[in-house]
Image 1 (cartoon, one colour):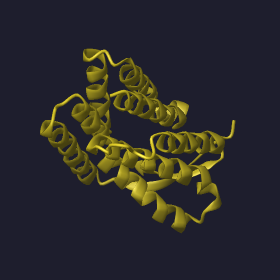
Image 2: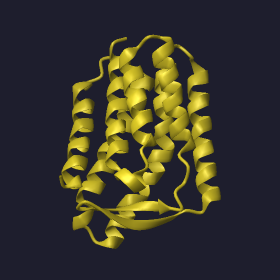
Image 3: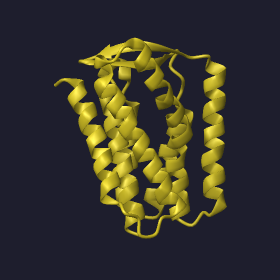
Length: 195
């Protein structure tokens, strides 16, 4: 299958998640954070899906925000989940500490953006590959919360993300990790929406 279709479908799924929870009857910081993460993933998947049709300069300009948003927003999933389980200010201190950690790792890695082609897609990625420590911590926190509070949607979505993200992109490509993002977002939305 052409990977552009997969990324387009992932973007569509994130759009449907956003639409299914709008309008927000009682917008909390958790739901607003999830909306921001979901919107960033729509953008991420869209740029990857259409990257082949863009000039290298335009693709580079549109790709830089993908990496910034990933560093800024991925830890907000943990913040949203912790806040849902009444961790209060600790939830957001934890998530913003992970944001700081991510930017620190990124800065020290001196990564460059390089073009990569994969099954019909053309996208920019980082070289050397920067360890996604905040994303791993986010997934582990959410997995632990799902298990401890017996919130099985959160647990299953996080567990799937953990397994799929562990698959090396150099061997299997980026699709498993992107599919993991779909599942962890679904699990988080379903948990927070259920009250």
